[in-house]
Amino acid sequence: MPQIHPSARWRQRLPLIVLAVAAVIAFVTLRDLISFEALRDNRTALLAFRDENYLVTALGFIAAYIAVVALSLPGAAIATLTGGFLFGLFPGALFNLVGATTGAILIFLAVRAGLGRSLAAKINARDGRAKQLAAALRENEIPVLISLRLMPVLPFWVTNILLGLLGVRLWVFAATTFFGSMPGGVIYTWVGMGLGDVFARDETPDLGIIFEPHILGPLLGLAALSFLPMLVKRWRKTDDLA
Image 1 (cartoon, helix red, strand yellow):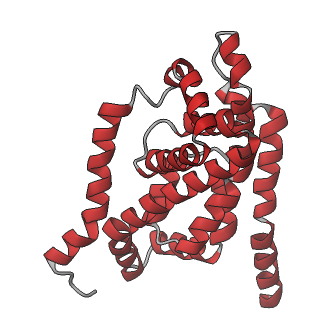
Image 2 (cartoon, rainbow, N blue to C red):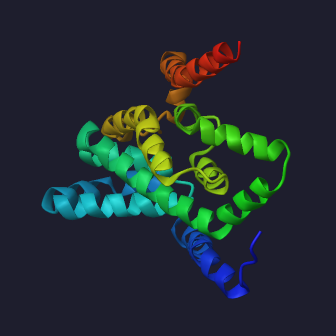
């Protein structure tokens, strides 16, 4: 395996280091602003600003959502609710998906450049279980990634970092993130549309709604369907060998 000059290695890791430092600073300084309470207390001012400056509000919201996801801050669910509260189901869901996907791509690229390529090279250079798993993932990237987005098994930010380490192709990561996040994103955006009534009752939104059987069931069904092409491919391969 070719040796990488130390200066080149540091240049590769620079985006990841910048994101990590920015994440720490943002968490310390902005954590109180990315909360349901902050949205509740500032809802009137936000709605008034949106009415007077719709385009600026939309662009600012998408930029803020990108930052939350790229920096892996604990506030993506609140950001999604805010999208529904400010912009309705549409274009709120679209704004949420664009922000989430773009932010995920940024952290994915930073992790891949900083650690993912070298890790993938080490895995490919050695025979073993890790190499077999990596090869299986590359062969079935789309169904596996769609399922990871549909089923809330891992936190969104953990999935972004993990896939950056495993050498997934960028276009597959971007497409599966956008479309795989769509059902859950639409559900939370829809919940955000009703925040006005929640505020009026002085309550908090039910963020666990996605785990309700009538919602989780269809999501699990979609996740299972996403594996169908992989099962068909494996069945055909087995049939050919027979």
